[in-house]
Image (cartoon, rainbow, N blue to C red; front, top):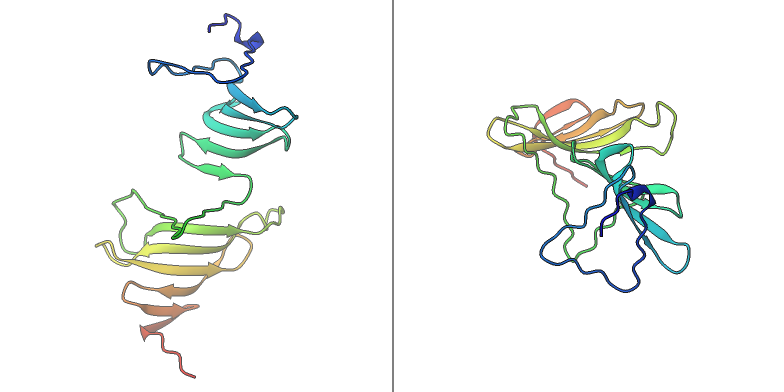
Length: 178
């Protein structure tokens, strides 16, 4: 199919569409989206965002909102709701592609934000990060909590298992009795 004026092009397919010979389906225009709709009014759109062609979007017309945004320039994925991972052994991998990390550098992190939309509430309120404990790939973990965008180091565990609590350095592993 070819349309000279894609802004007016509508193709309604009842049944299935088969594209042979490894030919891609190409959607052009100022709003290059493919819509999926059932008999009711529920429908989704997928494609390139019309204001930023570096963003591939999944748009829910019922909620009138983007549910998933994939950015080609940054590699970021933004979800509008919860992310559920179901598996017998679920796993999330955070892998840095930066091979230049030296002692003290953050290698990867998970950041937590409050639901507060004020300027102070929209900042990072807690964080778990891995950091290079040396120049040989050994990692430690830091747990930071607090508010207003500047969470403080509360617990650090180095690659040897030694811990630091709120800045109080220990030279041995944690021992709990009682």
